[in-house]
Each structure stands twice: as C-alpha cells, then as structure tokens.
Image (cartoon, rainbow, N blue to C red; front, side, top):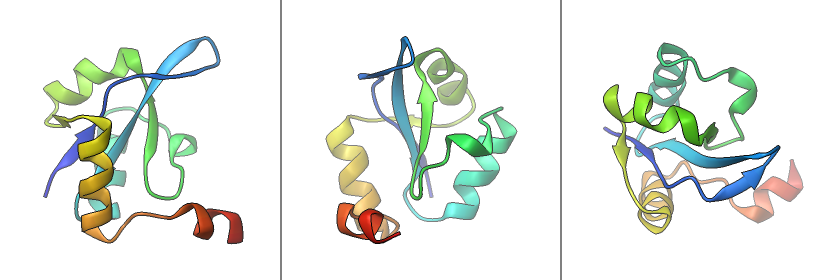
Amino acid sequence: MAILVDEAIWPAHGRLWSHMVSDSDLAELHAFARAHGIPPRAFDLDHYDVPEDALERLVAGGAERVSGHELVRRLIGSGLRVTARERRGL
C-alpha cells in the first residue's frame, strides 16, 4: 500500500496543484490526508487535489513522489480510478 503524489503542474486559484492517491485503499488515502492537514473538500472522487506547498510535507510523511503517468497507471491498477464517463454520470 502506498500514497502517491505527482508533480504540481495544474494551475488554479493562483497556485499550482498536484494529485494525491492511494494505490490500494480509499480509507488509507482519507486517513493520510487527515493526518497531514489536507481538508475533505480537496477530495475529488478518487484523488485529493493538493497545493504545491504541501508536497514536501506529504513526502516527509511517507507519500511517494511519482510522475503523473505513473500515478494514473497505479490508480487504474488499484481499481479505484473513477473514469470521465463515471464522473459525468454522477
């Protein structure tokens, strides 16, 4: 089980953002987010959006830094990925 974060390349609200996922368990992801001060409102169905300034804290806390491609590959492999089609249907 691992918590993964990708590079902060997504601009929004005057900041850069990255994604944080679990490669196995949403409960693990929520617990990690809670323990590291990431608010519940940052959760988006299968990932958390996290600001660039939180990355070092998350990595120091045990998150694994990966590329965006690797993050998506492992999220899909976990079975936790919510597809664009599923998002539209929600």
